Image 1 (cartoon, rainbow, N blue to C red):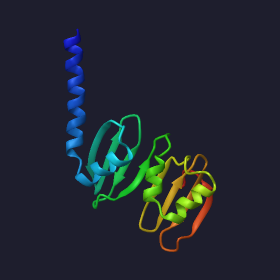
Image 2: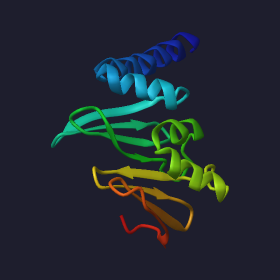
Image 3: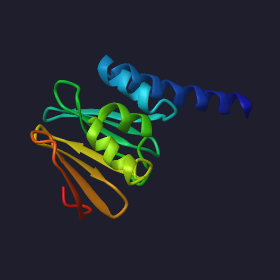
Length: 141
């Protein structure tokens, strides 16, 4: 019985290792820095997007240059360190001012804007002007 259990655990570890080995180094670094305790569920490439799913956790989408475009907590809040490091200073300060930095569930980035989904509102940051719009109805990305 314990031999069979050990074999199953070994196979599960091998699957995770295989998925990890498929990741481009820039994405692997991002995942290990901001989601170090999550187990990788899958990694897929399609239509110029690289998508990493963390088991029972976030979905991370990257563009062809391995820059993140969408980080979705799938119901869980995003790591504060990710927000601090990856959002423009003024946007992070805006969230911090309103004590919302621990209430971010999704962040979407395009060349024009960054949208931050909170529990029931969306904060939009214009990448060109630096203007912050708040609140919007959540889900209108």
